[in-house]
Amino acid sequence: MHLYDGHFGGMHLIWWIIWFVFIVWIFFIPVDIPYQKTKKESPLEILKKRFAKGEISKEEFEESKKVLNSKK
Image (cartoon, rainbow, N blue to C red; front, top):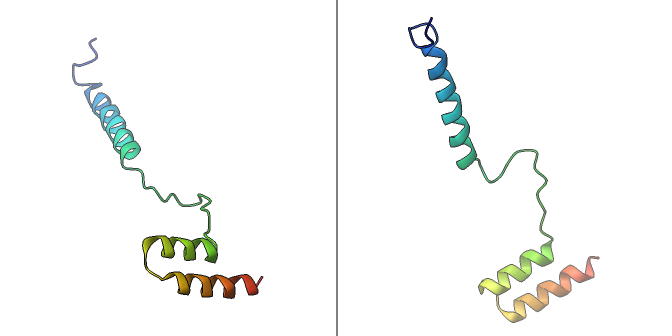
């Protein structure tokens, strides 16, 4: 009895499909995985990023920083 005489050919195809799906899943896995602990940015870190990007001026940065530090 040969393995490819029609009895086991379908199982061979199923394994190829399983491997293909597994490899595709590895390469296209989402970056933001559910249940993964993500670091929450503090308001000061967000403020520093906005200043670094040039979204706010130095005066706005200093004023917002004082407000954030006074709430601690």
